[in-house]
Length: 307
Ligand code: FO1
Image (tube, rainbow, N blue to C red):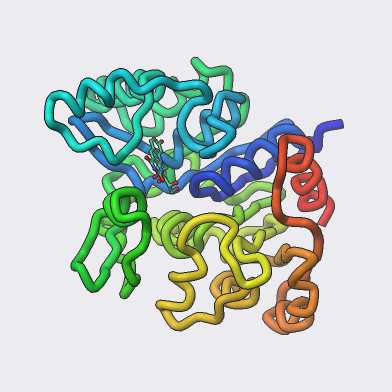
């Protein structure tokens, strides 16, 4: 049986995509609001990695190993790019490139990203509504000892090895939420995915109006910790917490979400942190948060919806 309440998920890349799939299996009215601060232009193509990761996962065609890109993709275009002397550190597969060509064409024709996203998602048979956080240009930049880096340069080209001194969300103060985003926060349940709080969820909350709408929302708000046993499930979240002076634990992230969540979901390994989470004014829910395959994602989604 699918839950019939309106559910909205705030998501970044792979962790957000997994929970989106679980929620899609458990509910009939899901909206996913996705970070676009990672967006990049490569070979003149407009790439929205987090939107595509969520879209491919919901369409059942995401690469199971990486979590991003299309399962079984080939790299003939990238090999040709290398022969033409281009950098190929960003691994764009041939099928994935079709998405970027169409998105770029639609954006060049003056169509907003939200519309282009809805068209692509519909063509791939994605049932939930998929919204970019904004139709405006916002770029996540990472300050490091080597200078200010564009997000994909920091994350992919340099394998997030640089020390993080700070994160800048360039353009965010001039951005407006994409159509439907603020209304979607007025759902029955709003879930914050186990995504990086600084570079995945942070940009979504920083779009003017979003944080205030979530703080004032009458929704049951549930945040899932991206830190388990002091380690990030994926990527540089733990290193970023440390670098920015926060405790490297599920509790450190809980402090960032105080006032924005009613329930905070932590892993069984972090059960001892539950009392400290509750002192922040949130109900601590303890369960297995590391998601395996689709059934396991659905299991976590159902537990979240029952919270
Ligand atoms: N992540 C990588 O670590 N290496 C890549 O070569 C890479 C290529 C890529 C291509 C398309 C796409 O949609 C995503 C891609 N990602 C890649 C993931 C991307 O960098 C995401 O921004 C991060 O996973 C953060 O969410």
